[in-house]
Length: 370
View 1 (cartoon, rainbow, N blue to C red):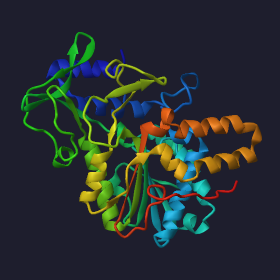
View 2: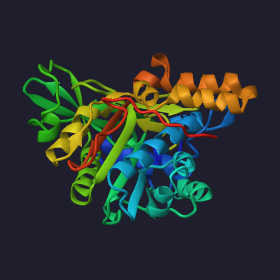
View 3: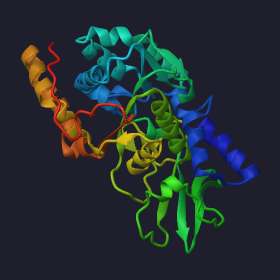
């Protein structure tokens, strides 16, 4: 039994069931025993450590293409100086390091930027400082500087807590975590009237059948509202990449990974990564409600190919022919529909004064050189 599981069992036995979103928050962010406070989550495979791998860890090409996209957008938006280059949940710092390396082709971009990370994990902050030592760290989005901002959020929103509700007639029962002996189990709480925000209600499919599960994520909505309000006030754009759905949807997507394999999300709190699918229509709706422009939500594979993924892969193979098989494998993993290409989606939102966002409705290729 993990230390956090014992603590949670004792709390539940003393105080009654806890909401699923509270359980998820504790399991991920408990100051002492939370997953992101004590674990090294990233790794190529279970044999090489870690519990999952993100696109920047798959290949340098991912960050390089985003770096070119950002530098191009900065130049077309009038090259503001200074500007904030922000990343939410930057992992080990790999993505930003690759972005900055690619963006060196535009020295004025590098000179004008101020890198800001929103990260709460001391463990991950230490890793980020090794790769991006000049960054400024913040605990919340509210601390970003008052200036034009280009923001990246790769696999950030999926790790924010969700609350599930099960339809029961005209009411909804919140899903809770309770105790059965030494086990944590899910149960349905007392009936409630419609518990969803106006924004989520506008993005739900119809009709909603009896016993259907709907996932509400106040933390996701709050974070997206902060992002959009900042961009609406100071200008810029946000690029959000995560796994989720592009159309209104319902259902249970709460899951856990440990050692690159699915596990029971209630079995070992603190030792497994807990996530839920991102509601991209909800994010787009929040952005539009704030007066921003939202580009069409597309699959990661299509976006990366529009940015020149195959071209960059060919360049790298010519530079390092001995790595041809590895580079092609990385390209496949990032873009193939059966890999990350279709599961992961991309949403870009921007201030109404921004130029068109490349890679969504028009092609975008760049020569990154070596």
